[in-house]
Structures are given as structure tokens and as C-alpha cells.
Image (cartoon, rainbow, N blue to C red; front, side):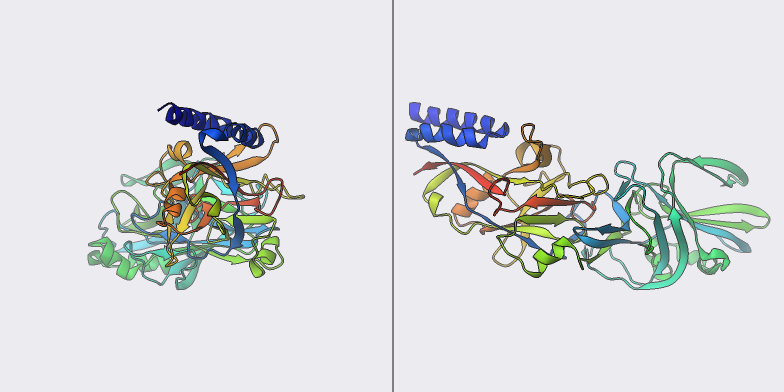
Length: 451
């Protein structure tokens, strides 16, 4: 009993020391006390940057997408990335357009004020709006590289000043009279450019076409918003906000009216808003490691949007194959490269790990469990970006104790994938030191007891 209690006490002290980021002191301490049967070591691992186009960007109940984005990035280390937004619009009422005359039709998209934008803050931003010609289904799964058919170009804005500081004042119909409405900052794009094609299509619909969202989508499938070629940043949108909608302004029997067609809302549970992404790595640093992947690469690249992730392999577990794992922690350090724009391209806030099954399927490691969208994820798994106060180096530390125990029991494979917590939504990237780096390289730190 005394020996067991001593081992548990030592393990608690080990974890305390490790939390303080004193790996060298920890190793020395345990080497002096290994006679009680608890050991500390670093198991070798291989790390490789891989392409990861299978990123899910829509799947009911499978992934959580906290935001959507539109834009283009020109990153010297990860090349060009483009985010397109494909979404359906719904109905909030059954309007009667008899004798209606079109005034204008306006797309409004609410900014996601909790994230807003990513990329160089002073870069211009612009969009193109197309009609969507493909059907979307809420119970389907869509990926970063899914493709959808686009129809006519119905809207265009370039050199947009994206700001959260300016409210927008609009004169529009309210209760059969014109009223001046002040809205929170949002994107506002006039569609049709005077041609009246899309707006007139809406006015020509019959009352029966508004009987349900399913019937309405047989006539109007949705919209695609894409970045212009000069766009230089990503902008985030809250597609569930009331301001994310189509605004149809018309006059009926000398009375100005407005019909709102929302995108997503609590009352429309069958609509879809899904991002797709495009990447061109030509001439970038990541292109070299993707073209010739090697576990000896000193740099690793992790990016959202179906961009690259990192594969982790454990080639030799003989050191601990007859042991009980007390604690296992994976650590990755940020790499600070000359000329890197960390203001425009800040690193990923939270990394997670997925295990790779022998069949090639991927699931979050057991240490994450059901905590992916919980605040407790940082407490029990880690993975959030932290700063080493002694060295000034940012790092990610992840608890993989349960997974490593399963791996030694033969219940899990020996490969993991390191990726963004919200890899289908948040357009961030991190550059890390690979395992081959002797100073700041990726490491697996173990405390274990011999059987």
C-alpha cells in the first residue's frame, strides 16, 4: 500500500512539474527515484505534413461549424487559399405578388463579430454572387473539396471596406410605411445590377411556391458567394443571424413592401450553408514538403479549410510495451520564421488529435471524447495555444493518456492526425517544429510503470 501511494503521489508531482514546462528537471527527478517503479521517457515519433482534403464542412450531428467565411489569402508559406460560401434561402411567410413591381433585391450577410476576419487587416476584400444550380440536402455530408454548379452572376462588389465600427442606415417599408432603420454593421450587396433578373424571378413565383421551404427550393436553389481575384483576406459571417438574408423590395398598388427570405434560423432547420475551399500551393514552402513528404522534415504545417494537417506515427513502442501508462503528453512548439506576418496570419488557437483506424477512418482520440465543443476540453485534453514564459515560445500540449493506453492494448492504431479544432470553419494556420528538430521538435512525454 505504501508503494502504491508513493507512486500516485509521485505521479501528481510529475504532472505538476510538467504543467510548469520543466521537462529536463522532470526527467532528472524521475531518474533519481525510479526504484519505486515509475519512469519518465520520450518515445520516438515521426511527423509528416499531409494533404487533408476530406475535411467535413457540413454534416448534421457530426461536426460543429461555428462560423462561415468568404475570401482569398495569399500566404507566402501556404500559398493561395479561397473560401466559397454556398447556401440556401428559405421563406418566412407566403407573400402574394399580384400586381407587384420590383424595386430592388439586396443580399445582406451579418458579420461574425466574435471573429470577424483573418489575413492582412489592410487588404482589400471583394465578392461575386452567383445563383446556385445544385440541390443541397441538410442530411447529406459535404466536404472542403465538394463542388456545386453555379448559374448567372447576379452581384459584384470589389474594394469593400469591411468594418465593425459603422452602423448602416436604411429606409425601408415597415407597417405599410417607410421608416428609417439603423442596422448593426453588415455586408450589403445589391443584386441584379439593374437587370432585375433574379428579383423578377422571385416576383414571378406563385403563392403555391411559398407553401413550404422544400417547394420553394425547387424554384430557388440558393446562392454562391465567392471572393474576387483582388480579395486579400477572409471575412467571417454568422449565417444564423437575422441579417443574413435576401431583402426583396417591391411596390404593390402604390404601397412599398419588403419580403425577407432568411438563410438559416431556428424556424428553418432544413436549410444548408456550407463552405468549400480551393488551394494552390505553387511556389510556397508547404509545396516542398507535400511534394516530398518525410518524417525528417524540420517544419510542419497545419491549416484549416481542407489544407494540410500533420500525421504522427509511433514506429517503436518496445520501450513501454510491457508497461502501464500513467500519463502521456504530446507537445508541439510553434516555429517563428523570418518575415512571417503573425499579425495577419495568427496561429491556430486550438489543435486536436484524431486517431486513424486500419481502414483509414478518423475519429477524435478517446481523451477528447464528447468534449469537442465544451470549455472543459482545455482542462482535460489541452491543445490550446499557450506561451512558455521561460522561452517566449508558443506551444500546444495534449493529453493522450487514454489513447496511448488503448494503443498498447491493441485497440487503436499507431497513427494520429493533428489538425485544427474547427478545421472546416476557422481559416487559420500554424507552422510547427517537426520531430527531427533536436531543440524544439515534437515530443511524446511518458510516465509509466513497469509490470
